[in-house]
Amino acid sequence: MEKRRTSTVVNVLALLGALLVCKVTLSIVLGYRDYLPPDFNADFLLGRESYFWGRYSCAFYAHLVSGPLSLLVGTVLISEQFRSRFPTWHRRLGRLQVACVLLFLAPSGLWMAFYAISGAIAAAGLGTLAIATAACVALGWRAAVIRRFGDHRRWMQRAYVLLCSAVVIRIIGGLATVAQWDALWIYSISTWGSWLVPLLVFESVRWLELSPAAVTSEQRVMSEN
Ligand code: HEM
Image (cartoon, rainbow, N blue to C red; front, side):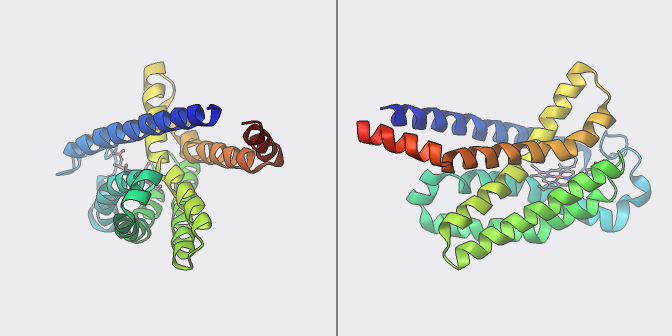
């Protein structure tokens, strides 16, 4: 009974999380009005005209396509229900996701990180995020190929947490604007916090689930029922 209630709460939270990801992704894509064609008076492109044309624009437009795609495909792939009902589609979308992140999103993010307007802390935060995301996806892919599905699931869950940093950083940015905090300073901190904090929460929850105390109490509940 207790277990069923917990799983209902988890499912409702997962649904709300997925809706939030879709809503923020939609607002990101609506903002592409400023990028097609590039408007150098728009917030993000302000001051970037001198280096925009050339390699930066290739990375930028590759990022604009691969970012929302990998976040939305990741939201579908992370669902256990989808995987168990449509295993073939899980594999197909999984291959698309691996290609999208390893060939486009992570390399373009790494390239753009060198030009992060708020300085070295932001550049390092975004660059490390790009490498960490690529590493999790590559390790998750390898684990699936050698049929270590437990490891595959954990690496891909980590990769999804990292992809969601794009949502977290924008929520932090929105709150900072409302609170009228110094946007550049907040931005530098959130290029690290937007993925390190969720990753820490993810690892802590996993650790608690695996801890002997959790296993013992679960076994106790089961033996009582
Ligand atoms: C997890 C890997 C990711 C990395 C390493 C990354 C990296 C970056 C970097 C370095 C920039 C430029 C920031 C600056 O110059 O200050 C950027 C901008 C951008 N990123 Fe990402 N990103 C990632 C994921 C995503 C995702 C999942 C999306 C889409 C949902 C996304 C959408 C965008 C957009 C639209 C911009 C342009 C600025 C804007 O309109 O907000 N990125 N990203």
